[in-house]
Amino acid sequence: MLAGCSSWPKDYSDLYKREGCWKGETFGEMLRDRAQKQGNRIAVTCRDRNVSYAELDNRADHLAVGLQELGIKKMDRVVVQLPNLIEFFEVCFALFRLGALPVFALPSHRSSEINYFCEFAEAVAYIIPDNHAGFDHRTLARSAKDKNEKLKVIVTGDAEEFVNLADLYIDSPKKVEAKVASSDIAFLQLSGGSTGLSKLIPRTHDDYIYSLRVSAEICQLDKDSVYLAVLPIAHNYPLSSPGIFGTLYAGGRVVLSSGPSPDEAFPLIEKQGVTITALVPPLALRWLDAISTRDHDLSSLQVLQVGGAKFSAEAARRIYPAFGCKLQQVFGMAEGLVNYTRLNDPEEIIINTQGRPMSKYDEIRIVDEEDRDVEQGKVGHLLTRGPYTIRGYYKAEEHNAKAFTLDGFYRTGDLVSMTSTGYIVVEGRDKDQINRGGEKIAAEEVENHLLAHDAVHDVAIVSMSDDYLGERSCAFVIPRQKAPTAKELKQFLKERGLATFKIPDRIEFTNSFPKTPLGKVSKKALRQIISDKLNNRITLK
Image (tube, rainbow, N blue to C red; front, side, top):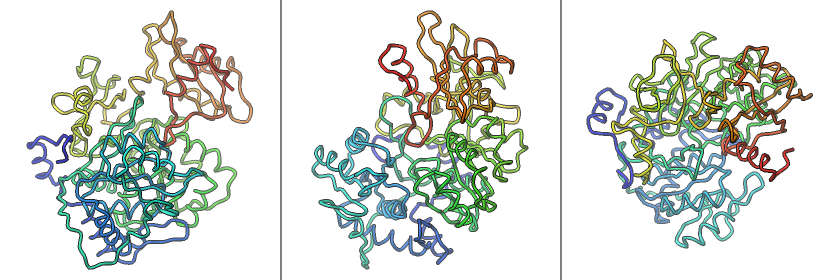
């Protein structure tokens, strides 16, 4: 085990092996097996380029040799900041075969995050595109090199003074020397915390491949499945739920999109026969608005996943009529636990819940502020442990003492309730709950009501400081073509029977929301915006 990582207690690891959760398979072995079985079937499509399973396996081998000759060895950390390109797959599997650990950065990260990742993870290399979305990533590399001149920088495209990735594919009889075990750490992911710089999440081959296998089964993937990746594929959701790795596990085909716009995604669905794709709620709303103005044939699409944040019931109800496909809600976290609505679930479950745990070995507790279990159906803090939920962040002993219970349950930070049939309903984040003079308001509940208004495209509700009540609520609203008035929206909520204290104290109209790197609404940024406005530091447009 990599120093600074927490492992599962022996009795739990023995249980997970005995029950067949952990089968002793590594990512390198997984790809080799699929290449032998799938041969010339296409694994990944990116624009006009197709790569078969056999070719991907072969190129990963050649690149592993080149990276090894560059000095990268087992347990070395390598920050990988690649967009949705075929090279992402080749780099990942080459590093897996070396036993080196990718540290997955998102394309939108900049010098503050990249310098931190490189320093904290003690990275020996940093792999980037030359340019992406109009940004020159080599400027980030120079900043990182200033802090660590020994850092090896590898670039796809025009490398300038750095190493060109294309030069590292070495066709040689020389074999990679590393012996990789399934219990080894495979890579480090980034936490999605709302404050501070991301913590690093260690995932083993055993636990992550188990999550892929179960996800592929629940999502009914097979060799004929075609997964469209429109979100940044380094993020856990499009990586594994079932995502690109889950699709490869099932022997299906991954189609890469450089962005999530309907103008790019809809033609790809039609041309490539896409059967499943994944969105976050703001993108789902955008697709819903766009579908009526497009004439693309989307009939191949069988499943539209929405996750990463709670999807309102009002919006969820519109998916099937608009797209003619199944909606699957996904609620999970890079630390482990993933919940899915099942494809054969009744409509009301799919619309009104965020699914149930994917594994029978997932352990769930919903507790109050004192860690006492709440009654079924009551809202509480979600705790979890299981065969693919980590037991600690990388090199974060002090934080781990707060984020995990003494008996190994991870404190997710989510406020949820559970139905009598074991389905989870997300009520918000513990920091997303508004305490208005002792009255607790779950932001998502009020957002769901506002989204039912015909003139509202999207909405996000946050707290704002108040000297008298402690907190009041502010609703940021993106209107459709004609904006309603604040008075109209408040009356609308009153007529829907919403308690008076839940009706937003303030409503701000805006054209867009600030976003996190994955494209979720950044409520942290919205809270800062309204704070600045209340303190007369900015004029909100």
